[in-house]
Structures are given as C-alpha cells and as structure tokens.
Length: 569
Image (cartoon, one colour):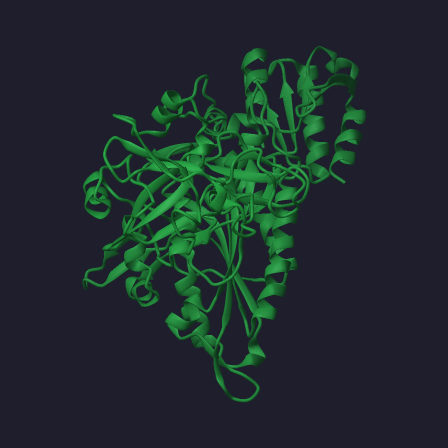
C-alpha cells in the first residue's frame, strides 16, 4: 500500500479526554476515530489489526473443535424474559420496539439466542457435544464509557457456547477452550494471567476464569501468590487464615469492659485516640437484602467483599444499610453498633473468629467495649470468608507464598454455566435410554476490540505503538526520505515490489513530506520493521530500523530483505 493513497491522518496531540496510553495512541496514529461516546470507527490501519486478531482467534477456536456461526444482533426481548435476565440486566440493555410494538434487544451477549437455536436443532445425545462460536458486534449501554476501546457501548466480541451431555464432558470442553485462550493471548504477545473470578450476571453453577492483561490502568485488582500458581480477581480471592476451632483459653480472657468514647465513631478516630492498631478493632456493619437486615463483623483493617457476603448470606445481592435503617435495626447510630447482645443475625468473618479479643461498639451512643472475645461474648454460628484478601497476607492455597496485587484488564472470561439457561429455555436432549435431560452448557468470551486496546496498552514506547509481528497492520514500512530523488525512488520501489512479491504486506511512504514528519508518523504507527531509504540509496543501502528493539543499522537492500524474511518464518 502506498501511504499517499492510504486513509491515514496522524494527530500531533490526543484529545483531552483520552487519558489512557492505548486510547491516545490509537487516536493519534490514525487507527480509530470516535463517532459518539463509547462508539468508534476503525480506520484502515485499525481494521487490519482487528482482522489479524480475529484470524488468530478463528485458528485457535477451530483447532479446539469449535464451529463458527453468525447469529443476529437484534434479539427478541421475549427470549431474555424467558431466561430471567431482562430485568436484572437493567439499563445496560439497549432495547427498541419495531413498528408492531414488539420489543427487541441489541445483544450484549448471546446465551439466550444460542440456547434457543440448539433447542430447535438438537434433540438427541448423538449430536452432542458441540461447541459453537461467532465474531460479532455487541451493545451495552454503559453509564460512563471511557478509556477508548476498553469500555465502549458498541464493541466486537468472540462469544462461544458449548453443549454437552454431562458435567464430565463440560470439564473436557472447558479445559480445551482454556488452553486455546492461553495460545490466543500468547500469540497476541500479551503479558497475562488467568484468575478465578465471579460469574456475576452470567450466572451458572460451575467454575469460571477471567484472563487478565496486566496493566497499571486496569479496572480489576488481581491477587497473585508469590509461590504457587494461585491467582484470583480480588472480588473472588480467598482471604488467608482458616478457622481451626475456638481457643481453649478464651474463658480465661478478661471480661468485656465498657468504656466512654465520646464522638469516636470511625476506625481512624478509635485508632488515633486509643493508640491501638486497627487489627484490634471489630467492625460491626449492618447490611440488608430486601426487607431483611443482618450484622456483619470484620476486622478494622479489613474490607467487606459484598459478593462473598451475598454468597454467604444465600442471597442475590446485599447493600449497606443507611443511617436510619441502622438505628432502626440496631437501636443505636452507626459507629457504636456491636455484636454483644445484638438481636440480629450475625455473619462473622474468619479473621474475626480467630481473634483472641477485640474492641467493638457497645450498642450505646458514645461507648465501646474492650476485651470482647469471639465465641464467648457473641456466638460464632455463621462464620465465612466475607472480606477482601489483603496485600502481603499468606496464600491460603499453598501456605508458603504471600499475595501480591496487580492491576489487570479483562480480555476474556469463561464460565461453566451448567443448566442455568437450558433449564429456563427448554434445551433438552434424549439420552441413550430415551430420557429427556437438559444440555450442560459452557460460555466463552473474548472482547476483540478491548483486546486490541490492551495490546496497545502493553506494547508501546515514547514514540508510539509497537505491534507484535503477527498483529501489525503491515509487516514492513518503507520510508522514502525524498519523493523527488530518483535513486531513492528506484530503490524504494524495488524493495516494495520484492517484499510484496514475497507475500509480505508493505506500506511505502511515498508522500512528498519532510523527513521529520515521516519518522514521526512511522514511530506512531508502530510497524515492526522500518526501512529508511535515504542518502545511501545510490549504493543500494538502507537504514534497518527495528521498532521493538529500537536498533538502527545501515545494510544493503538484499540484507534487509533476508532479515525480514527470517523474521516472518
């Protein structure tokens, strides 16, 4: 491709609202343009990179035994109501009505559509297992779209769905797709981690994993063991410490003692005024689910994990009670609530249950209790891991390493759905004995446009993008320093023709621009190899610029061709 004919405009500066490196560089280098908030157009360079990502995904999904399909983006709302997801998805769901007032959904994901398809196509165990996938545009009405392609309202996604006759079959399929994902992200040149995660709105009955590209701007926090291979999203990471039983000497501890703490309501105030560390304080928080209130106990230096708490309480979701609800439920204002004598169900975090004693609210304004012993002064009937794991604490899996925290960008998520959707939508099959059974499902997603941004976030330098070899829009970028120099034109054209003849897609900068402009643009665009045709053209020599290593060396045109050929083998 000749750059003089390419639809490409680079920008000296990124728009003020582009805060992440990937957003800035993809805009400045002419890969994308914003049409509306969270909605982007892919210019020729951007589309080429996206196609290369799609090709890697197709190759690995096909090798894992999946079959590509394409379903509509416009989905009947009845399907979503049938699965029970229409209301819970809320305002994130983009909906519309046709001229007959029939309601439709612009698909953010396709569990319902694929399950509906399979229930009409498969009725016998003989046609199972099967794994189906598509690459398609999705829609989610994000409240605050941001960071360019990392959180958009319209995005490209690969979503796959597996259908098996039993859980053993699902386990095999899940493992196969898991390995395919590892190959995909490795081929994309990413530094990534697979972590245990929460299923969220997807639901399901089995395990699930997220694949995270490590990046400082990531919205997710990952807890990673320094010794074993355990890693999990912070919302799912198991907190250290196991309850081994109530201490035998708890009855020998001093009796709980009430003391005056006027206007000391917060953990920080107690720490500063009482000269104690926060791990000696037991926080008593009041949560609600529907019309039910209950108390939650965590150490003063720990934070409640509401996903874990909801699971421990056996409810779909929980919320922290407001000040009025706290007074009604506990009989005292927030900050002075304590577990001793509290007439509410209590869920106790494991770390609290292991404390020898602690300071709690006294259930009376301006008073606290010291020497409160778990198991003696309040019951330990419901103990669970309900807090966020803490940096530096011992890994509960191996007992050797400690947690390190990393930020990550979610680039893939896989789920064992079980019969979550097949039960609701009636996707059943007849087994060998003629009995009707629900299919066992799995779900596997990769945000392809988000993946493109994550790669850009990890692979750039001060000059611009640094695409991995397999993803670059072109393999070689030839810069002709002077469009009017005959010797340069002859050599640049000869290199262009030879590289193109070898099947190596090449971008030739033949524009009548200053050398500085061409170098600046080449640095921004990020093609792996740049050949600079300048003053040495009469000798048949070029400057070989390896963008990823930053090295520059003057070599013959023949040597440059040989090096490029060796890189692509």
